[in-house]
Length: 430
Image (cartoon, rainbow, N blue to C red; front, top):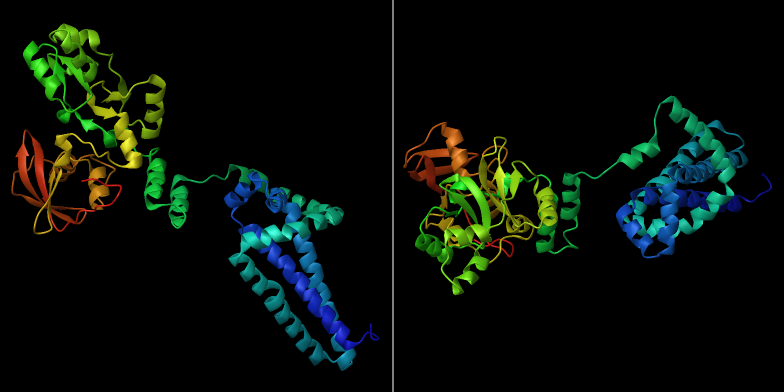
């Protein structure tokens, strides 16, 4: 090689460094590309996306051809620099040391770090382009890559590692999915983003978190007189009501109010009329995830269910609308009993009902009350005191100062929370 001009060897060295940089670009871009975006493009018939997907499906072969090319080119570059040094400086050891340092620096800058930084910034654009080059290279060098991978497979077997099985069993957790939705905020409308996050939470939220407590459920007593039953039907705020006999514990069915009211044209509504029109009660075990219950409502064609505990006593009522509201937010039409749960005061405090669900309180006022215990503010306060507190007592829970305004029937009815601002947006109606 001593007969080759110096400038030709330098040009060849630069060419080798550029080619090595190409393989570094390819490696980083292939590993950093968004797999979900890639699958979407492949499903649409994008040719380069299809090629890239095929390459990534056989990662061992892809890395084999990339690293084979990269290391061969880097080794060739170092050898060429040694030839240039020996030719120009007559085998001077110090010059060889300087040449080694220089070629190492050049490989790091031009063939490794810079290409990889660029590939990490634009992985999709580069990976899709390089797939056209890597695909034929993999076919050409397949025998060499296959031979090298024999030793790799043997080493993995000795270490008892199974990369393919690990890749197949890797799943996205709900928290990771929520992070993915949040990071896609520039591409998803805020309202849609909130709905997606709520949908992910359906698997962790249970019917106990959204049910209307038993003390607040509107129900009809079959043993009441006919006039009282008619007045209750005419003034109720719900489409479906539970029906009981003698005691609220003894629920005998669910009645569709509109269907019963239509019969008033033909005659007087009586307990017998209700009994004939009512539907059998649908019971839901306490702790059922909302997502599962939504599917059960669909399968059973029910819209209302009574939540029961392990002893068979019913705790409250949950409807299909309650689950839908967890996804899309509250409806604009609400019963009067739900519209006055928040009252803003001039001193920036908020008057709230003790029966309010902590999930609603956290969501609407952007608070951080714990959700792993009691479901209502009343329950949280009773757990804090381990007793029934009197009106006028102040307390601090989770860093929030509160004052009990009213207690009645062994329950906290009204509470004032200090220094709270209402959150009003498109998804929250207060």
